[in-house]
Image 1 (cartoon, rainbow, N blue to C red):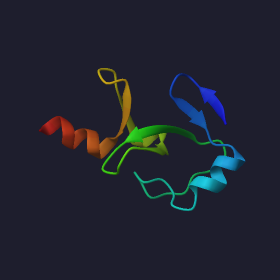
Image 2: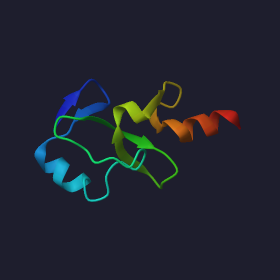
Image 3: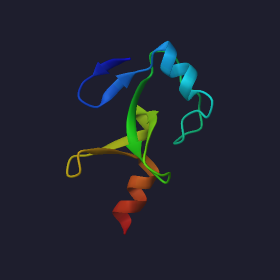
Image 4: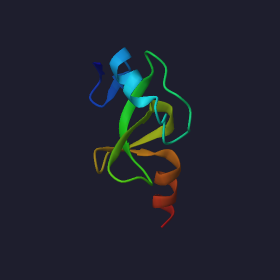
Length: 76
């Protein structure tokens, strides 16, 4: 797995085989080789890998959040 910037990584074959059992928790799609993913917080417990396009980076907390979770969090 390669680093891409500070928070983004590219999916390699080992990570692909591990993560595709459940897929992306944010959108439900399976990961593909070379996808950019981030560790993000969401409605689940702890951090999970999600597609980069399904995440929002919060500079204040220095953390990625799943888009819908972040939008709901901002409304409250």
